[in-house]
Each structure stands twice: as structure tokens, then as C-alpha cells.
Length: 335
Image (cartoon, rainbow, N blue to C red):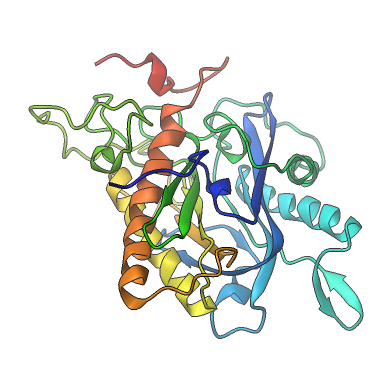
């Protein structure tokens, strides 16, 4: 039987800490994932409208093998400034990739669209995301808030608030895998108009309500529910990190990111649309010292999808109501 790590958070993967920062007035925020030591990393985009920074270097054929941090941010393209704040903090700590006698912190980032969520976006000349990024990484710790927090502060799904979710799985091989997701999809995470999560078969305990699937399944279960049918391309996006303490190559980390996208498909209907910028970063800290056998590697990739599906559901499950919300939080929905 699968079990979670002690926190049921991505920080159950040794070598990672997470920090959040948010601005309640603009209904947006930033989440920083800090690597205690440089971690092998890659990524995969399957949505049609991504917004990213420093992702080309994560391809297995490119030179940089390891990174210092990852940033998930609201704010659409404005939110890419958050990585500059994280980079500034790391530079002050003397952290970064050494080149030509200089230290350059390597901080890939991805953003989601939360401009159309009821928050006041009249922030003046410069958006606040650089400073939010600096604050987020300053607060990085093993324990962190999920739900309406960090990059999930202003997130929305179809008919419900989105949020920041996380989950972990301890595998029989001795390695741990963890997921973190800022859940802001065009589609729905619940079955039809019910409170039951699409990811129910993967739930461990009652981590997102313990409701299983509805019985019988509602007639509208297969209806395609979209958040804003007039949103157009780029109005959504679920961005995520999958991480493990196993020893992986950069190419294997790429495969881990690909596998984690299965969790999107299991937790969100529909996912990977032209109006989503769905992206997964993959991190391998190597802290377990375990290089996986071929069979154990398959278990890891299978767990990547299941753990991601759980993290997505937990983000919506943990969202809390706030003034000016366009959609209700899951906790306020009645069957």
C-alpha cells in the first residue's frame, strides 16, 4: 500500500524547501522552490499557452546540469519578474553557477494567468512580482501553506477556486517523490458539478475529502466545463514541480516531467488545451543516493502521475474563501 511522506508535501524530498508570498489586494502571489544544493532538472510543456523563463537550458542536450531554484508565479507575463527577486536573494548568498569568475543563480520560472480574478491589478509602473519573489524565497522552509497561498492565491478552475497543492509518496525502493502544483486550469477538477474529485482513485486516506467517485456517476460527468469560455488562449494554466531524492540523469528528469503530466490528465478535465500553459518542472536532488533499477524506475514514473494528481486535488480542496472571489471555494460547495 502506498503511503505519503511525513508532511505529505514536496519537501518530503530531501534537499528542497518551499516559500510563499502573496498580495491579497491583487489576488496573486509567488511560490519559490529552493534547492539546498544544485539539483538535476528538466521540464515538459504540454499546454498550448506557456509563459516561461530559463527553460531552454533544462533540455537534456544543453550544458547546465543543475539548478538552484524554481519559481511558480501568478501575474501572467508580469509574473516572470518573480525569478529576478529569487535570483537577487541567491546572489546575496553567493549561490549560483560559476562561470568566468562570477556566480549566476539558475532560476527557471513559469507563470499562470490570474489577471481576470477580481483582484486590483492597478499596481502602478512596475508589477510587484520581483519583490514577491524575494519574499517567497526568504521564507523557504520545510513546512508551507497550501490552498489559497503563493502562486495559487488567485488561481481559479472551472466553477471553483484553484490553489496551491502538494503531495508526496514514499516508495518501496526507498526513494521519495513529491509534487507541487499551482492549479489554475480552464477545465474542472471535480466530476460534473459534484464535490467529487476526478483524482479520487489515487487519494491516500482522506487527503482531499475521502469522497471517492459519485455513485452513480452523474450524467454530466463527461460534459466539458470550462472556466471562461470567452477567455481565449493564455487565460489559464496549471504549473507544477515533480521532485525526487533518487539519483537521475538530466534525460531521466525529462522523462519524469513527462510522466507527471499524466497526473494533469487524471485530475483535470479537460487538460493540456490550447488555452492552458500546462508545464511541469522535474527536480532530482539525489539525496537518497539510490540509482533506480529499471523496474523501480517504472514505479517512480507511475508514482509521478499519481502524486501529481493528488497535489492538484489538494490545492483545490484546501482553497479558502476571500472577499471579491469570482468562484466559491470547494469547502463551501454542497452536493
